[in-house]
Length: 202
Image (cartoon, rainbow, N blue to C red; front, side):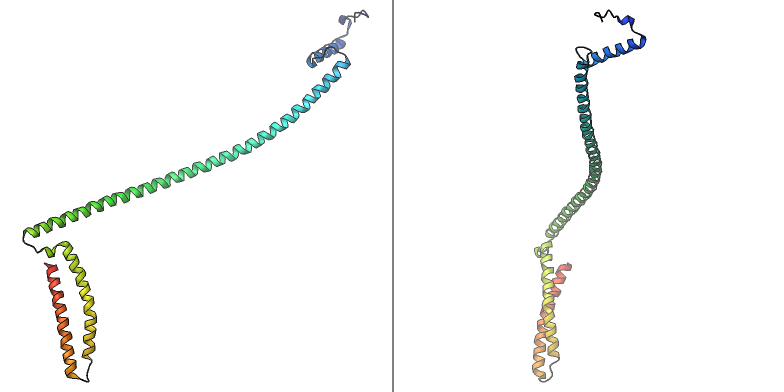
């Protein structure tokens, strides 16, 4: 402008706006001057930066989409885990209540069992002090009861044997002898049973 003796003051308002826009563009593009040779590479670099930025934005958007899906899946999983945890806690509470109830019942039964044992021992001591035969203790009575059941089982075949003898007709004298033997054997067993039963009732 100096060589042609030209001053910005001589520009019209439109020309001043264009000149200011040109200067602002050069400053924004960081060019060394306002020549076309400086503007074209700067604009090309800016365009390349723009494409790179767009590409980076697309990648970032894809990453955000993946993160959102992962976050949604994580939230759903967390909700399911919380529900499962509540169910597990409820089940555990119920099972704990059952265990506590069973423990209480076990303690009660154990105490009652010990009470019964103490009562049996005390009763046996009292009976011993009164001269009771040791064979009538609780353990002895249990053994006698088992023996009684065994003897009853033994009488069953004898009764059947006796019934078979009663049906014998060809030799009355021999049949009578067999019948008498079976009766005596049965009477002996029944007498023993009666004795045992009487001892248990005492």
